[in-house]
Length: 405
Image (cartoon, rainbow, N blue to C red; front, top):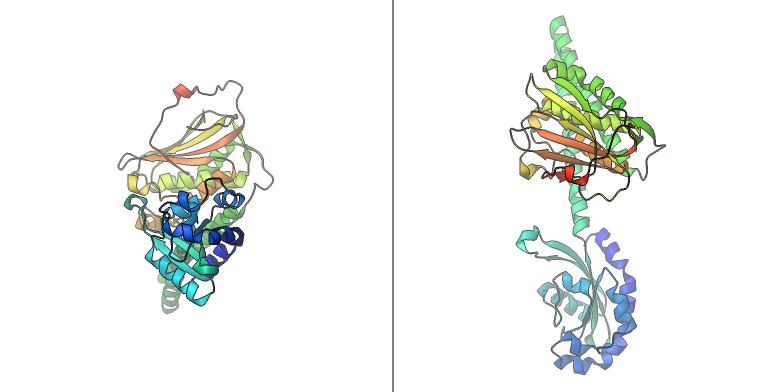
């Protein structure tokens, strides 16, 4: 069993203590429990203090007799699918109980519990069995599916970053060798030097994005938030992407509310909008346009009293399939890997946008259809609005099938 999972389950020793305290009661009622068909018959109807305490635990706790009949199980234990009101339903758990009884020592194991097919892959459960007197035992269960998911994310991250760094480093090594061989050919030398410069810039871009994302993910609050002009954010984002847009003949347009302000970090917000505009340019055909519209909105389901500034970036690109919408804000996820690498993308831009929005108390939404373009909307709490701007009524706000992050 993994050490991390063991630490998690060991950390709920309070549950063991409470259940062990209950064993005196259960031991005295052991004979009656053997013939009782339901948990209600095994335990008196008047709830005891230890029952109420264990019911409050998020950790599953189950008390069984020497025949694996359930004397008590809290809701958390039953919800994991290893026990029901009468007995242990997992054969693996039964075997673990037998081992604990034979050895007289606690046992730790990691179990896999099949979910309903609609719920996806099985749940991972860490189980700790503590043997008691008279063949009884206390079983603790902790759902560690999230720990497994985090481990997978970390493994994928290491694999992805290794690949992303290996590609430019390998290219630079080959180009350096070619440059050395072409020492007497000025044109070839210049060409290879340009390629090396391109690859080194790509690697620098990747490292910069990694550092930025790491800083955003680790930030508990914004460092020194200050009033930020939304107009300035958009103008700066346009300035940083204009050359790329001009190469493709793409027009950058800004429209909507002017003079609005948000409270936050200027650099982070410019980077977020620049990433959205840059993505729109990368996935748009030549000769089209990218529009950035600022509006005062009230996100669906929002209970915030302050108004929200919505910065919507619309492109006329290839669009995004519905089954990919949920993943586009993941680190290194690319809809078109070849196009992304060709345009110098790192696969981290939208992840940075998502975490920037969250750190500013906002969120980001996307609505898209294949071949119909996409709209990414960055929603941020407004600090101030132009005096002639009115907030929209709730019935004036349309709804779309958006993915919210």
